[in-house]
Image (tube, rainbow, N blue to C red; front, side, top):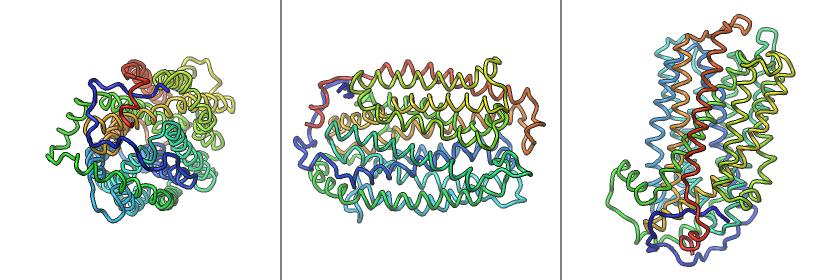
Length: 493
């Protein structure tokens, strides 16, 4: 399998076990629990990316520039916290529930409180008070769940070093991701955002948002408990087995996080490439997600039946492709699989905007445009799945490579660097989108039929231009990964 990473120099294998005594195959209980571990982050991300920008801009009425600034600050702070969490999780010793699960369990309550209150701002607040509310509880929710996501993702790289098992782990993680974000829009538009005479576009109704926030809060907390308990025993066995060598090999120089970040990229250059790939992919994915309700409401003018279908179309495509992704990756190699998936993903996302702008698609507000956008998103979901499975495999291989280069646990710090790219990508989108809405003075709390056409067209061109730029950069960057069939045995063997 061509998913292994070529280092710039031969690594020192000091501190890395020559033979892993832990059974490489996982039980289905552990596999399914690991799949559940992946769900809370995507639950948060879907709810945040899809609803927060739209809710605060079009329903609450917070100025677009302030929204962009608030979300950018939240994600910048989250980005600073992630590598610290990764390093802490790698080096944490003698914690009550182990170096991964101690942080994971500590994340549950802050996340639940923060995400619930993000969707429940009191009425009658000033712009600055709304901004403060979003900043405070947004930070609590996003930084709180980072204590879950970074160590849980790192744990996935440690559950097994067997190549076939890792492919299955990567698939299950993404199946979990897709299942949770398939359920959320169905529940959201089936129970909370229901069409009424007063609100034919139910996402413009302020009443359902607090209850929706509670749903996301309690579902996320329940998934964390189930996933954490189900993986706890396996993770503790691995930590106890590998602890002696890793403790001896650990570097206690206490370098700054920024210095550690630069040092990691210098000795394992693929970490820098991983961060940039994660940034560009999440930049585009967040762009599509964060602007979906704006485009669905004002550009495509989808009705209450097609809007939730739009939100689940990509997930349905991804679920279909998950079964094909491992064989696809084995057949053409990780790098080519990533490039093929990404090129298809960017192409269909661009077509969903450029064809309506050119008058080459069905008219806005019709069932035909809903079906057309559904097909574009479905195809995009297939392409995304063909990318993301090899991407996760490569991420774990880079963690192995960095562990070999440093002689200490590295899945946590590598996972945190990947999440830096993800967080920054989402943050830049929020800043740009919010600022653009403010710059063009995009109207808030206005019925769809009164929205100026030039404002809607400007928004569509804005989204399209960012997709094209990010797609071009991604096509170049993925080609810089160095894949080597023979490296992996030296890393894990």
